[in-house]
Image (spheres, rainbow, N blue to C red):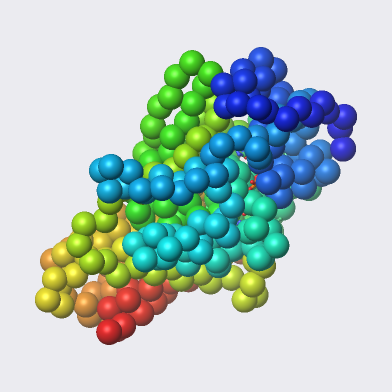
Length: 328
Ligand SMILES: Cc1cc2nc3c(=O)[nH]c(=O)nc-3n(C[C@H](O)[C@H](O)[C@H](O)COP(=O)(O)OP(=O)(O)OC[C@H]3O[C@@H](n4cnc5c(N)ncnc54)[C@H](O)[C@@H]3O)c2cc1C
């Protein structure tokens, strides 16, 4: 591991100043992914600013009915929180489908959003990887690309966004709250994550030094059915090959609105807009589910080893829709 300095932040503005002041400084939250990447020399920060003790660990209802989840809340605390389980079940399910109990007890919301791809060519520290070393090439594109993305890729990068939590947050239209020592701003979750394009090293719309302070979930009006289906090589402690989050509004057996998002198959958390449009105003039906799910994978660009992914993602959508609409 490359040597680095370490400091504990005492307040949010001081933390933001400390990271902004040094181009290669980073925040340290639970450390469950950053420290791994430092050991692999994939991340080489020269300064870590520990934000674990900042007052960002609260989940609360806001006056407008939305829920604010502090960036420092652990994944477990989010997943088991009464409000989240009752009103945002898809988020609870997605988090509990990820990592392990031990990791979830330490991992935070902010760190989870910013986890980096599990692409083996990125993590091995030696292969050509435009995300790790801009301009070096993409060995995954011509290599063993079984886990690579099929949506949103570019000729510079075919890596998949690996997380589960963000997929559920996308289906809930979450908003990411960020701050510097001077100002705050809000970013819609879909705009928070960037497509790789020509700059795959730039994964989010955060500027250096900006700290994520919270994620808010808009109020959900009316009863919804929510679910998360994750397909992976083994039943636990594994990243998604394909996953689907769904939030459905129903009225007398008709789907009035659907929000569907996909994980494991795209460069960033992916909204299945074509599926959503085809479901609105329709009654649940297996042929419709199949057709609507497939529509969101039409633009997929599979490679040699991941040609199974469009079908897998289609089936993940079909399954979550079937489970939700068959449930009493
Ligand atoms: C073996 C293993 C299996 C896993 N399986 C899954 C899985 O199946 N699904 C899944 O979704 N995840 C999985 N994960 C990833 C895990 O969820 C992340 O490691 C965790 O959520 C990261 O949170 P953290 O607080 O530890 O982040 P850290 O490691 O502390 O930080 C990660 C990054 O976020 C930045 N950061 C942290 N907080 C902030 C903030 N408030 N503002 C700005 N920047 C910030 C850091 O600077 C760093 O760049 C797995 C991890 C491991 C090690």
